[in-house]
Image (cartoon, rainbow, N blue to C red; front, top):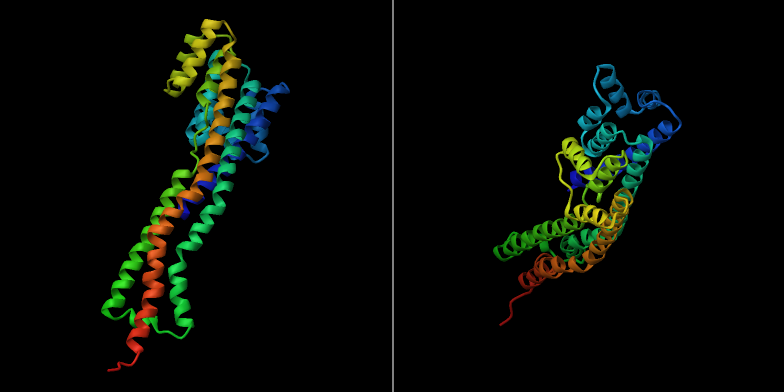
Length: 297
């Protein structure tokens, strides 16, 4: 679980950093600096990805292949770069749009993780309640630990331990299900919009995008393209508006999942934590009282 959280935090940090690099690159290109020179300026500023791109360019390769080899979000940037290069789309404008999409996706993930923090922390604290009760019983003068060595106490210990394990597993599963994904909603629409901004037809744009990424447009993107054909409206603006709408919908859905998590976390509390509290906290104290009480006739 800790490794998963660290990976998610690292991915979120990388997404924010990549958005900044892409934005700076767009500014340099818009200022009239050639793409290769722009990458070198970023490399001199200490950016590792820009340094890797410069090495690939010096070896006769392309910036798109260097970005794709970086994997993760950079791979998606590499696909967009390749598409823009093939169709002759303005790189500066294309990169600005991608930077905005990355920031939106990063903000959505941050919103969801912030909303998840409180119920997640509460569930973690409550899950340790049975062990706290066991220590409290010892502090009150009972002897629950010696009772746990007896057959009835061992039953309480094993059953309570299994319930605590089930509580932690169940809670982790609920929290993991509520976590946002790493994908960027509407990215296919953004990339197709970049291809169309180069002045090519819709079939040619789809062909270029498929060759660069191997992906087909989603049903939502296909419906937007169909609307553009039937209405004669600019597909670029429709696609970008649809991508922005999908990112907003993903943010709203993530917040709703985080809000409903508080209610779902009551299930492991009632089914597992409270019985474990009785077995590990109350049960040993009662057994301690019964075993230490003198027998009377």
